[in-house]
Image (tube, rainbow, N blue to C red; front, side):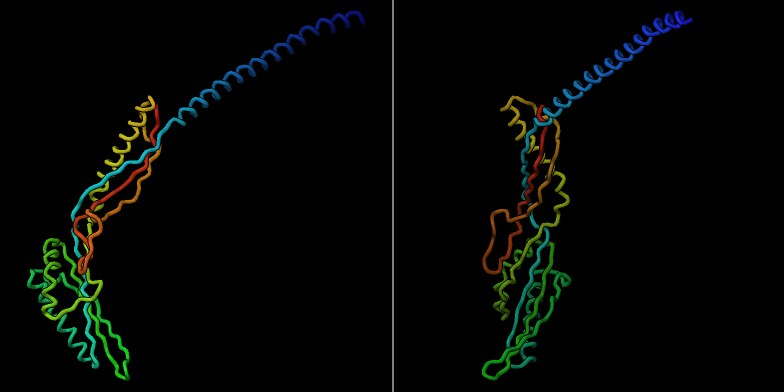
Length: 250
């Protein structure tokens, strides 16, 4: 009986060895396939990373000349007297003269708005002096008429109205939102042109936009800052925007 048992144990050993070998080969095959796939993915990632590094960042500029569509003129005038009533009466006469001045130029009455009255006083050699200051604001979209008014303001002096410093007119362009999309597109085209020149010099092609940043819009005087007594601004403006664009290079 013992001999038969020994014969059975010997015949089982090769079968167990074959199973172990098969499991080992299967594991090795899986590891090999994993290494191949991992190498492929790593290589593809490196290629993509390298391609991502091929880019150029440029700036595009768009400028447009516009004419202001809103004029605002704050006229400030004052009178000083030893009597509050006298000072008040003087500024009231000035206010009437200012309104008649603009009425004579054809401005509607609703384009003139009182902007407040201020009263102050001081003492000199024991005498109290009162200063009454009034402000009237002209707000109009008639730019040409507003310019004529500025050129004719000497008439106010002849009427006895002395305007204080800071009474200059200012012009505003309010149509920025209407031209923003076109200007951004123009600035982007300018940026692409710069990128294409760079790509041509380096032997590459310009691809798609990877990232873009729009700068802020600025509105300034078309011919530099205008100044001078009684002239606070110019109606001729220049709108400017700069965009920063990152292009991929193929």
